[in-house]
Image 1: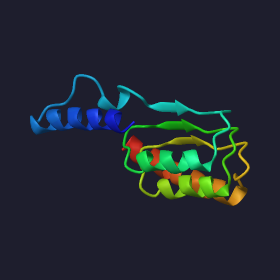
Image 2: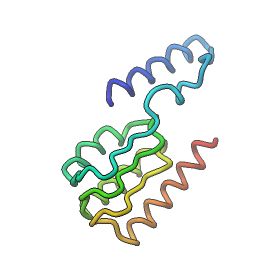
Image 3: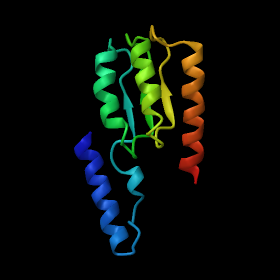
Image 4: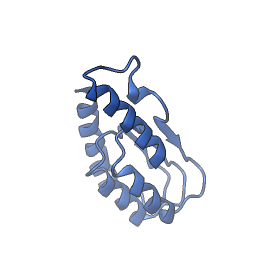
Length: 119
């Protein structure tokens, strides 16, 4: 993921340094969505994932539905959204750590990101 992000950042930098715009939208090239649904993933996986997503500006959708993520993992995702302003869809349903309070906080941050992406 880190190499993918770096490639996009370099491409965007090259065009901006020349005062040009890329022929195609850089944000639409490459990985925009990851689907990890129903994989029995635990919070240890989330800890590694948020390391990359905290500084990612490209991923738009992440599906983690139906895994084994506890409240610690859900809280890590919530904290990651304080820095990540590009993710606009995060499905955390059907995980043991998913609760109404954290879900509503995450939902509010995703709405904030939607507004920023539209700008």
